[in-house]
Length: 112
Image (tube, rainbow, N blue to C red; front, side):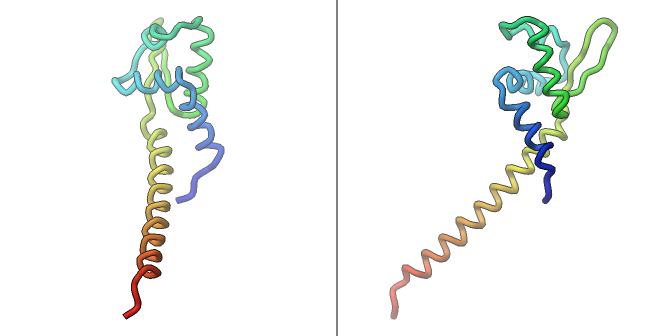
């Protein structure tokens, strides 16, 4: 399966920061207002909003205004792209280890 490397890089970059990862985990419970997402983090709101912008630019989240409140939601299909990438790598390495194991089994057999 082909992947667009800059897209994956943006996804992994977005998830590499502890604050952004915590926000992503919090959004697993469903869409939440920015104020609730920001509350556990010891930083000024403008700094926190920069983290939300990175997540949104990477396609990890989406947001919409509801009245005076901005609601942030997780885009699970975007996270699935990263999961698919890891699954493909896991399959690739599993196949390689299986081939290595088979090779070692053949070379360690005692001649009859």
